[in-house]
Each structure stands twice: as structure tokens, then as C-alpha cells.
Length: 154
Image 1: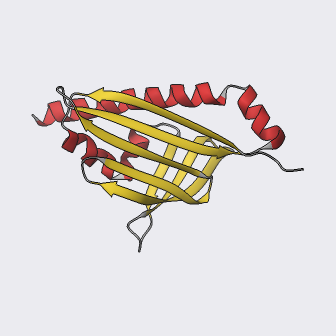
Image 2: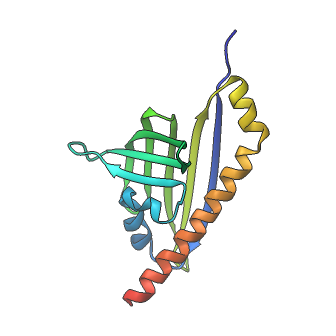
């Protein structure tokens, strides 16, 4: 019997009253992500390879998971994309679009969940809705933080 693997993918966006350059520059250093995503406990660039990052994610011990990701595509002021190379299977992207008020940030995340009973349990407890709500809250936190920082610098 083959166990079917589930992929959970969500995209959320936020309008930020800052320039694309300001928004992109903050995201370009992935080590900043825990500042606005509380479930991301740490992101650390691995020495020797500028494209590899070690992530720690979760609610806290024992509900933590880790992975290493690689930047797969970077288009300055437009796109940062990544995928895991070990640990929790996932991939995602942050896209940056200029607007009349500043920048629209589109964040897409996808996780491969385990199949079988564990996957069914995660589906039944509403993991998809929970993930989307957390992503929306995180992007709103990002928006508030960067707008406040830019205002302080003005």
C-alpha cells in the first residue's frame, strides 16, 4: 500500500507603504524573518555557501522542526525563491510588486505533510486554515514593523 503525501500550499499578500527597495532589502536577509514570523524561531545562513540557510520552526520544544533550504532564484527587487534540501520538505517565494502606495508583497509557502494517519489528523484539525491565519498575521506584523522603521528613519 502506498501512502499518499499531502502538499499544503498557501499564498498571502500585503500592501506596504514603503518602496519595493525597502521591502526587498529587509526580506533579502532571511535571518530577519523571525522578527515578524513568531513560529520561525531562527534562520541562520550557513557558512561557506551563501545560498544555504538553516531554519528552526514551531511552537517550541517538543513541537519544533528544522530544515536547510537553498535560494533557488533571486531577482533583485522582484523575487526570492527557496526550497528545502534537507529536513521538512518545503518551498516558497516572496514576490515584490511596485504599487502607487509602495509595494505589494506576495508570500507563497508550500509544505509536504506526512501521509497516512498523521497527514489525515493534520488535515482534520484544520492545519490549512491555521497556516493561512498565521501567514496573514505575520505579514501584517511585517507591514507594521517596516513602516514604523522607515518612518523613524525619515
